Length: 357
Length: 114
Image 1 (cartoon, rainbow over the protein chains, first blue to last red):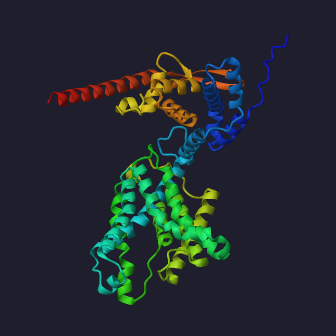
Image 2 (spheres, each protein chain N blue to C red):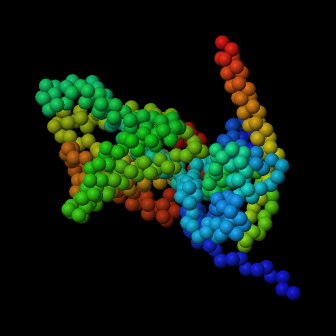
Image 3 (cartoon, one colour):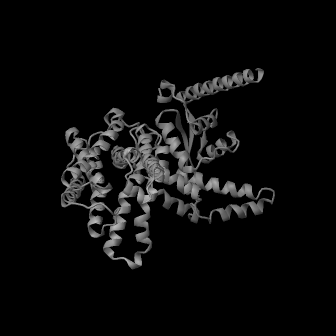
């Protein structure tokens, strides 16, 4: 007598699609949990179908169970898997089931969010202070700019300062909401360029895309700040007034020489990349080097985009010195990426203490 | 000893619900989702992704363990059970919540008496 068990039924559409969604998870994790997760999802959906037809008889219930298998996975289940995938790919030192590489990657991306918000918050703090304390001269007032406008401008600038402060003190959810709020006005210019893509040159379009990358990359990096991420070191808070004061230097140079060479958001990310690279070399820490590479790639792309079309905020004259520095950062990012690919950089254990971050 | 027990850290609500569901009887993934929904009177409905992230964490902290595996419709179905550390962590959390509830009730009674 043949004791071979019957072959399993062919996978339903629900199962096929859910397994496709599960490919978002790291391979090792998927290998361990995939069957179990699929089994749970099918049971959830079929039991829901059962309940919806309760009281209509067993035949109707069986029909509903079959129909449930023909559906796509519900959005909340897809979102649940996506959230788990982000947690595992951009892991914190305590994330269960995550690889050492994912922890290093998570450290690097979380630092990109910190540097990105710091690069926005430093100049914003300076702008808020100058808006509040700078006298409004008669010629400026003649243009319709009042004390009320100055206060409103200062308050708006403080939104991004608050976003960075919340992130640096470990309240990443509030920081994310404020950061999104703060970036919305800046999105208008590149978004309008993209909306009118049919009437602008390819260079202008590329510039707008690169500028969106500069604005949105730090926001996307905030996704790596989850509840199990360690709190950043207090040194990040101290960096805020330092960056704000450094932002004052270009204006002092301008008053002394008439040459204005203030870095914009892309330039500041390039400077952040250089700072991370210096720390990485001092500590021989792969996660800082990866942060440097990511920041240089984003800042360098923004810088390149500005060169092709100048889609950045209009008004600031750029000098070749800054552009050269940013191009250097781009070159560094390429070298770092190449070194990472060949495994030549030190890959130390990811930081586990907030004091090291 | 797990981090949650040794450090006295509060468990999250979903973790408390999952541990509670496992008291006295091992369960598989779907049964846990159903139990959590029932225990929370419909307030907490875990997605499968959230549940397995949680199971992985509780398992790595030693609060739950794999009880057995069964084949079901051609797929592996795992059953989880509460460990001694898990029971201790749940007991500590239950006492913490009971203390909080007593304190809240006492203050409410005192406020009403004024």
